Image (cartoon, rainbow, N blue to C red; front, top):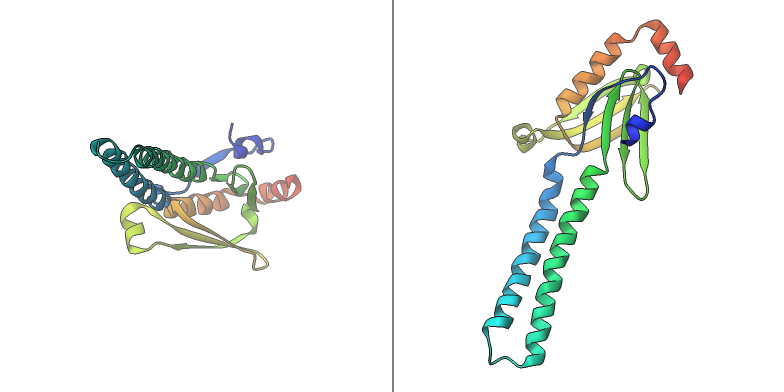
Length: 176
């Protein structure tokens, strides 16, 4: 069960969820491929050169195997980072949770959202990622970077704000 599902108040529903875009994995994937290439080359070199000293062969073999494992760890770390971030729009608030071992949460009531700024770089427009900065009443500013489908996220926030009735605004303020 996700963090956001656990923290819903009675009558509140999740209307839209997103997470970090797969682009955040590029650095991890590049690092892993480099480690795998070097590790694979060391293993290949160790086992195709029979004239190599036994100690050197073992060092190259174990070093190559260690680099292959390190590459896997790099991929897993990136995957955990990506999947440990949850972003959602509910009928009452916007919730962002990041982190696994240590957690950071940002919750902003819909009636406190003043402005939503979307920034998409050129590749972000093509690949579907960007940054959102939400500015709340009182000038509170929160930025979320490299999220998937930032325009859809902004549209959902705006639609939920439009659906708020004066009674909902009061209930939302009392429930937090």
